Amino acid sequence: MTVFQALILGIVQGATEFLPVSSSGHLVLVPWLLGWQLDPQAAFVFDVLVQWGTLLAVIAYFWRELVDLVRAAVLGLIHGHPFESPSAWLAWLLVLASLPAAVLGLAFKDIVEATFGQPAMVFGFLLVTSAVLAVSEWLGHRSRSMDSLRWTDALWIGFAQVLALFPGVSRSGSTIAGGMTRNLRRPDAARFAFLMSVPIMIGAGLVALRDLMGLPDVGAQLGNLAIGFLAAAVVGYLAIRWLLRYLSHRPLTVFIVYTALVGLVGLALSIWRG
Image (cartoon, rainbow, N blue to C red):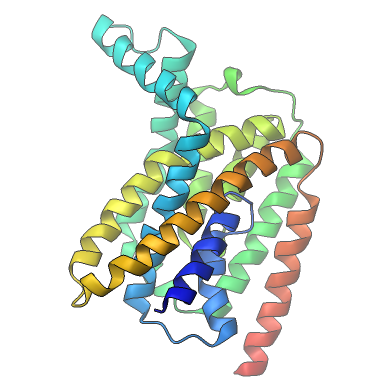
């Protein structure tokens, strides 16, 4: 992987991690469309580790809220009332929502990795993303705030995140849709989705870090990882800020149309290429 490729993929990661269009899918499709021949294992590890750039972005954007959540959860445990305050309750809901993808992601890691080398499957999963977003707009009443979340809501959103283990299914899209089908307002659904990205990104990054240590040319990868990390962090921060403002006034229609068009055109192109 060259410096230029790392920069482009970092920008793609930052722009698409929080927009409901699938960052993992775009990280597979961009090299395929541009004809880049990347080592599949090294590319997979790069894709996951560069998510730490977007992890930095979400921590930077929500750092006050994250500090409050962690403090409330710790104090609640110390005082023997772990769910007493609204912040502590939300913190544990985020933990609960993260469990399904964490457990199933480890259990089916090899199967998930295999799909990263199959662009046709990515295009198909983009159509799944489009359908999930469309259903959430159709079913959701958008009448609840994040403060009203129950443990059943968090678990539902957590299982929605499981879909995003596969490239082409947007993590932010599936979790935002999960929240909206529980009648959360769009900005509240997005906010919960972004906050619950923190534990899953940390976990995925640690697993990828172990894989990175097993590569023979690990030293040569560090410079590219740093470039991709910084690009993803900056662009990711801007994407969070933009999307939260966008969803305050507009529906998910543009993302439904985009993922459907890319999926359909991509499937046609993959069939044409053979």
